[in-house]
Length: 438
Image 1 (cartoon, rainbow, N blue to C red):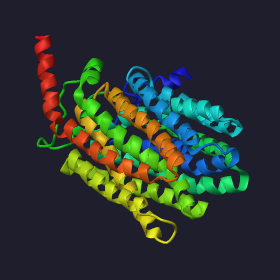
Image 2 (cartoon, rainbow, N blue to C red):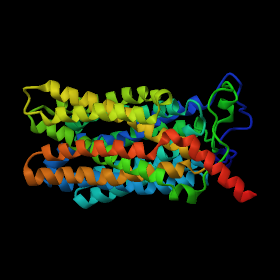
Image 3 (cartoon, rainbow, N blue to C red):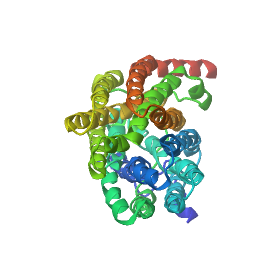
């Protein structure tokens, strides 16, 4: 078993030399996309589980949404460590063990009968495992294979997370027929059976600041990644990474997870059936995929322009959600689901591509973990605060308005991070390292 996992540090079998006409990085992209779909389905279907858990236990919406808040916070905190460990140890082994652990404890949710059971099992244990089998290790595995087409590769890989929202359409009938407890078991078994073989037999990790295989096939006029590489201390002290953290905290963490947690219950409150509410949830996920597929335009127009388009569409669509009153105008819910889902999908790969532009290399996993920490803190605050606002006011409208404001501020922070100047930052780093060596 040790021999099986102990591939050379690049994660490439010596007997599997990469042919000039085939770039194995695209296989890694496919593996990552499928894994994102099913691994994050364990988290993104919480909105579908939210109503039946509320009905059975009668807890407040704030305390019940707190389950999800703890989940995202724990994930964000652990992501820093898992991303760093991925640069030091065998990622294939970490991901495989993390997947088995995640699926096992997710199935144990079926035994929960107290709020603190959910807090520990789903809030703490599941995201710990997920941080070792999900994006913190997947994104360096994808990004370090590419240079010129990095934004496209990350967008395609992360598109799988958009499909994870559509699992709600599968889970909802299981809940209706067998209850939410068996639905948790069903999800866990499905994810383990489908994803573990992909990690064991097809995932290859490539550390390093750029993909020499890809860059060797591009023209001399194409962009080249500087040879300089960041240190761990350099990443942690950089102001650019903290601006990206703030941006992701406000947009994807606070705003999107507040909406995701409460949108199904909001639709039910307006008078829609549970399956109709789940369909809005699935539509959100489908449009997230579309947005991620379109996010490759960030390679052409720049990360900031891509983020501006995403935020503009998302803000207008959130405004449509604020106008929803009952079931008389379902088109407003469609505008919300289509627009916010598309905006979320469009901006997310651009954020990770921006981080890769600046920090690609051995500690890009650390940079990714820090961005995910922003997601975790925002994802912890947003769902809980959304529930608290509802408990205090009897409506979600103030909470939804707050998400709109946060999206605007997130765009400003992204511009200040200035990924458009990534080459300049890395050139300065190269000169600094050269002077220190001299």
